[in-house]
Image (cartoon, helix red, strand yellow):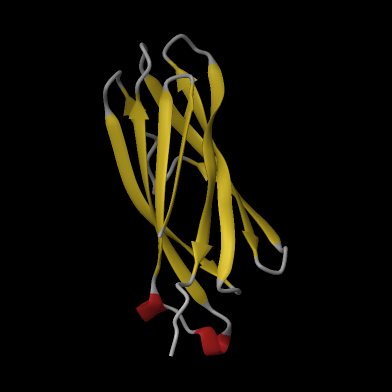
Length: 129
């Protein structure tokens, strides 16, 4: 399990990742990871998450970028003190990698800003036989 946390303009983003052994097939070069994201509005005005930008790097140095509207089909609006949580997954072709990125936010005032998602690791737990 890996965790990360970052706060940008009152928007706190916490991520926890886990390896999904039962959905992975290392012999075929397929590793699957799940991650849970908790977004908390600790600021003074409502904000809305409008899009996401992920940077995914595997152990071979291959970089993949994922961009799109919202997260898991939602563009959550968070009043001060509100929290939005979701789960998603990331396939890799190596047993280790990292993810980081930003959520594009719009404050009620109209200000746009990028809430940082601090880097977190995706890694198959080491097994000793």
